[in-house]
Amino acid sequence: MSEKTTGPTGNLTEQPKCNIPTAPFPIFLLTLVTLACLVPFLDKAFHMDDPLFVWCARHIQSHPFDFYGFNINWEGHEAPMSAITQNPPLAAYYLALVGSILGWSEVALHAGCLLPALAVVLGTYFLARNFCSHPLLPALIVATAPVFVLSGTGVMCDMLMLAFWVWALFFWFSGLTQGNGPKLCLAALLIAAASLTKYFGLSLIPLLLVYSLMERRRAGWWILYLLLPLIPITLYQWLTFHLYGHNLLVNAVKYATSLGVGGNFLSKFLAGFAFVGGCIVVLLAAAPYLWGWKRAVLGLPAMVLVGWLIIILKKVGVFPAVVEGNVNWSFVVQMSLWVVVGASLLILMGVDAGESKTSASLLLLLWIAGTLIFTCVLNWTVSGRNILPMLPAVSLLLARRLEKQGHLATGRGRYRLAGALAISLVVALLVTRADYKLANASQVEASLLTQKLAGAASGIKFEGHWGFQYYMEKDGASALDKFDPQLSSNEAIIVPLNNSYLFSLPRDYFVPWLKHESKSSGWLATMSCGAGFYSDGWGPLPFIFCRVPPAQYLVYRVR
Image (cartoon, rainbow, N blue to C red; front, side, top):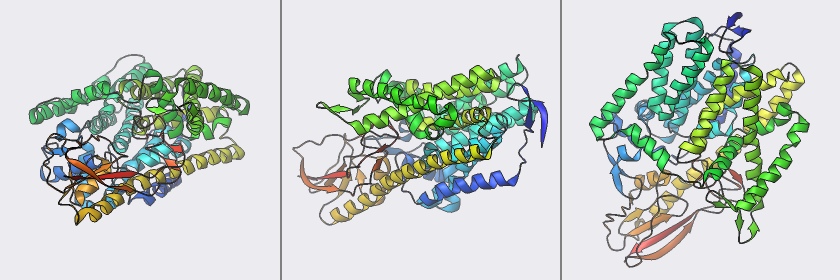
């Protein structure tokens, strides 16, 4: 059912009522697609920063009011959890709830994280009814994007934060349009929840303030609701200072802005555009329909220019494109492609803002541009996790453009777009499978190494962290403290070369023992060969098609 209303588009248009009830088929389809993408990866090993959230959740079970009150060795030495983590604890509280109900296995915790992923897709669908006439399309764009599917296979805070984000926007639009105080209050609570899940959620406050001022043309009583999220945030700041002696939000800001990896300003933006293009593949798959074939072909000379720039620079961030005069053409071509695809989003934003000139187009512009600036300029690293928050906005922008061009008005146009979504989904599943194999390899190799050394060594210590640390400690090994190693004779030290926070060992105390190689993870990489989905400190691409070399593990013995 629809009605004439002046909604978030800023124009008198035929729009659906801003209420949740809707036809069951879109909800069923979106739920089916989301679960079909994520359920096959439920047994994925804990990966990258997953252990931080799992350890915190387990601690919360026994100490619910002291969430960071324990020490870990995550960076080569033991330190308080409050100094290591750069995220607020709400995601860990959610995992603690899931763990207490379903258990602490990988399958159980990943199953619990299906709910936030579903909330993101369905929230995008309901939010899209305020922006376009075909809300199913942007929701499907989200569900089939590589950055969504891959992020949905972890237990970190990003997906839960985005779920709170999109539903906060939905209820804010609804409450502002209808003058409904309870809905605005619910939106404020969701903003607070997003901020206590990941600090980036705080950016919703200025985003909605600017949008609402343009929509209403003047300040009103609704501004008071945007102040409500500051109350729990302030209480959180007071509590953490009281418990841990320092301001966690301020520490996170310092960490994000002072620790920089991935190279200079130009490298950061090249990586940022490459991540946008690779993480949201539909920008490429639907390019002929967004721009027309003639304009889409202009991307080829643009790729040549970007490739020429990369060759002149010789490297992008930490990854060399030219080694001893030899050009890594596979990297240069893939990097150039995704940079051009990602940069096309800027044109799309400008076209939508220039044609619409409404509060809705301004919101999408600020939402995407703010996320991109944070990722490339303010944050310490470019990663898929940082690109994820802009995904619903990009999907809405694409849907609006395709509607204006009439591609959704005919069966032929809808079939073409279904093909573009299918391409995006195939890439998403391939990338997620590659990351799944990488995560599980750490689990398998940790088990193999501890079993191989158990009888030959007096003890086992290791360097590195991420999921490898989780499974090494689960198998009885302990992390080596570079400041206080506490070594014993004939003890084994394992060094995973495909990991981080590695440090050199003094040759006077250690001798090489053996070298272990895992099987190659195939022909697609997410954290090697120029790809660094979780940090561009490993490479400026979110993923790369190449022959992935086997991971190497060096084992030393204490003299």
